Image (tube, one colour):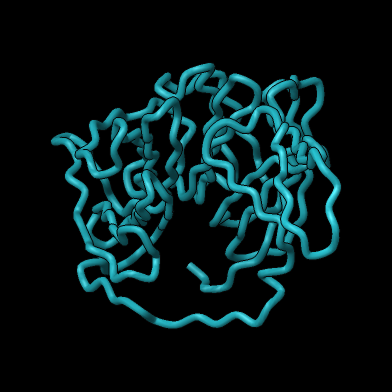
Length: 273
């Protein structure tokens, strides 16, 4: 592999989909106020149940920032993927260790400034991780689900933690119907009532997208295997739906700099070159 990573931009544009579940921001005040007087805001926003936090102060990331090394986790050799979440007032980081084929849970307690306690997540017998890379986490109806990509043997597992992230998860291997070729990263998307999994294939130079239907616990189906024209070993993947109701994704590539545009129609990725 060549240690240089470029950027491939993939734009997922939604057409013909139902956006009735999109978040609508709506804040107001019942009274007028004078300068320096405290006011009480009324939150009339819709479709915002779950983990939403409102911030009325802009520009924090424009300030001078610095990074400091506060902790070392010696038990982790090659951190290939990390996800940090907050649950019930406590912070957790889940870290994939590519070298030891393991998943670690770092527990910070009530503040990320605390020194974390490292816990090896006990995976069920039969969960065959080989050089795992990608990991993602989602909470649905009070239960936590993790998705881990086992790069070395072309597998994807769903980990069911239940209501507590400190639980030992059960594991289910997902059937991608032969559409995996050295999978690297995985992303989860929810559009309307339908969940999607999108996996970057390092060897295949493509994105495998499968629909889970209306339940995160379903097996993926209705696959779309989308070639990335001109890409060479895509690596790193992120997708997000923005305020203009369009999905956009960014994919990193080891060897080339290419910009590619895709069209997402009714859950199907189609190239638009």
